[in-house]
Length: 314
Image (cartoon, rainbow, N blue to C red; front, side, top):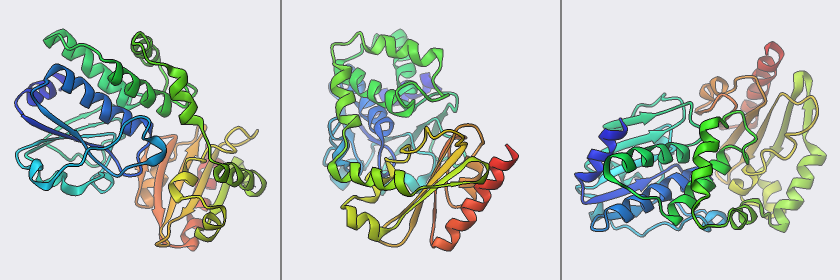
């Protein structure tokens, strides 16, 4: 499959790389890392990265401005996006061919070429693996910008190498990436930075989260509360691990209300499998990290009851 992706890239002049909405470091790192590699090896090709801008992560990469006509006859590559509903910039459908590169369970097998590896810690790790194949076949060389982006993506999705998805392969790839002359410290600082508003909301979360039976934690973050703390729903969602280290906690959930009253469900676990629960509520994800959405606070009670049942049986 990697060879097929390489051959397909070589056959297109225009390549537009997408990722999921509300991007995290892996979405942006894999997207930009792949773009930098292709640009360096094929300088005559037109390479673009598109999607909604995330101000707090612009230190990784900023999106290109792409007009509608550029999508015609373009190869579309979509990174780190399990289903079509989460693809950022729906103009992808006007491209000529679609490649899906992802590490989530392949519940929505969209695209003409699919490379899905659920064993990978991140799609950034997969892009490094693709680079190795490219290097062996075509002599592709790693670049400083590509290494910086892929490193950021791997660090983000492994929780600084603390999550169970971190493997020997992860450390091997990272050991190669840091040979490039970029500063990991200069990446860590903005990745860990919090605004004053975020810090104060974090204090509220620690003071008000519920610790329920069977090791379940939960917090409700209403739209009114987020307005009071002047924090956006996406910024609030990034605080999902605020009480992750509380002793006895097995799994936890953040309910984050959007301005349109849709409630985002952020699920995390230290062992019990939770992506099946997310699938029951318009979502999905990894066994230990998943997301969903509900349309009322009444529905959040159903999610919470099912999560308690999962942890009781774990």
